[in-house]
Image (cartoon, rainbow, N blue to C red; front, side, top):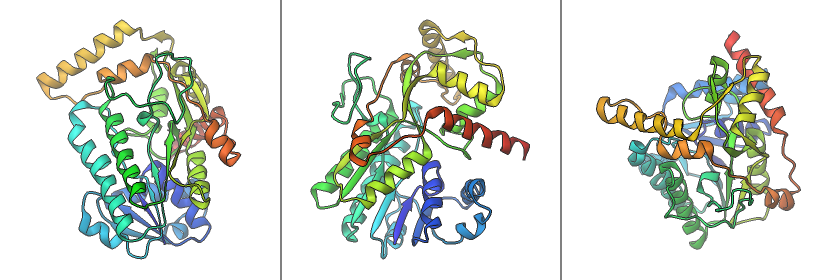
Length: 339
């Protein structure tokens, strides 16, 4: 039996589709019943038998911070894909980020150890990888994390979650960790998912930013996870990035795919510095939800380039070109708009 946490999220739903399509016994965790419709919807993109595939999943209502309910989910489980996470770059969300990303991961690791799970795959992030002072130097799995940097609260908690997973390896749990870049996939057009970027470009964006980051297709993330879990590889982490692109280039490619106007004005560093300060002031004075943090503003103009050679060489892995991903996701977004 395979257990998937975060089964109603972007990575989890696509992973579940792959697993049930090959008749593997799968159990998945969900927190709110209304989120199950998202999984059905993702399945409907890729199969006319979406409902039939969905019914193959044994769903268990649980929260990764609720140990008693989690214990039931682990009965008879041999392999775990830990995809659950809380994604937010809002500084005031630190408490919930720590609870879900760090403590929740610790619970998954502990229950995996207690129940004799054979192997765990943890979905981390490139946010948990260190950076170089030279922006043109590629970041790889050996790049050291610097706790003295002005890291986002999300990055700090994903790094903390990785420490829990590495602790598990010291206690005898075989593990693989994947560190995806910005994951491109369909069906999740709101919140912290990358799908919201497509939505925002479609609605119209006047400004572009010049920072560079790594992107990867959701199906490449799922494929790499499954291949790593099916292999004898253990206690290793792998960066999953297809291409390093500037935000400007990404925004332009998405706009073209959606047949809308491309952003024409550059958001200069001084402008971003003003905006994040006003955003902070709005939050403090009126309780408005944070839209742009200091760290997010910095990331928007930072050049971070990632090296994918480890996964490429280890598994002879070939990534999907990002332009193909953009075109596919854009097509599904437009399909959803038409209803």
